Image (cartoon, rainbow, N blue to C red; front, side, top):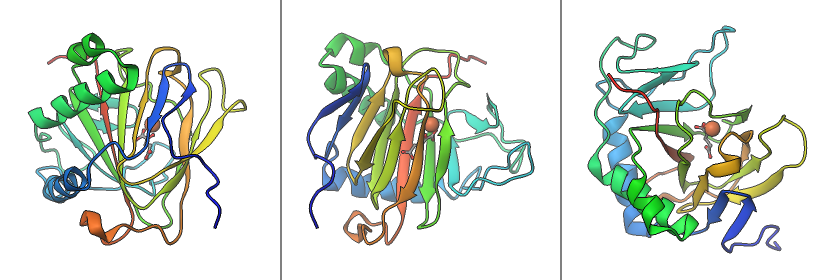
Length: 219
Ligand SMILES: O=C(O)CCC(=O)C(=O)O
Ligand SMILES: [Fe+2]
């Protein structure tokens, strides 16, 4: 089948950069193994309940701060009341390298200080509707890492849910950074693409996405 989307570095919108194949396979394997541990707890991976009574189709585990609609807390009142595990230093370092490389700006990378990660697992049917990441009180970029099956990712604009948007494929190992004028752009996962599983990453099926963020909160 012809490749519908180019697999080369692209600035999708001002401040929004896609770097395909950024993570080496070994790094992906390490992250999959780590996610498996994090999913066990102290706050286990769960489907987040929404205020409207719905349940998200992705399964999520958070480190550093716990996200529940629509705020961050240290403890997971909506799961088991436990305090989330700390954000490992190696994820902070990975985030710094990501920002430095996405923006070609070592100083911006060095200054990046994420304090939370949301790890989302998508099975073949999971998706995520268009939304803004706006529960953070910081304009620092969001660093997104994808592992496993590919997805169709829609990246829009900060004004509204409508066009303009760009549809791109996020594949295993891809980095996507959105900051600056795109920090509050609407985005979502339209679908996980069939027949794209990547068992060589250690993930038998489905897709993992890790987003590093700066909450701007302190205890
Ligand atoms: O899975 C993705 O690529 C995006 C996830 C996302 O937008 C989020 O967790 O807020
Ligand atoms: Fe998001």
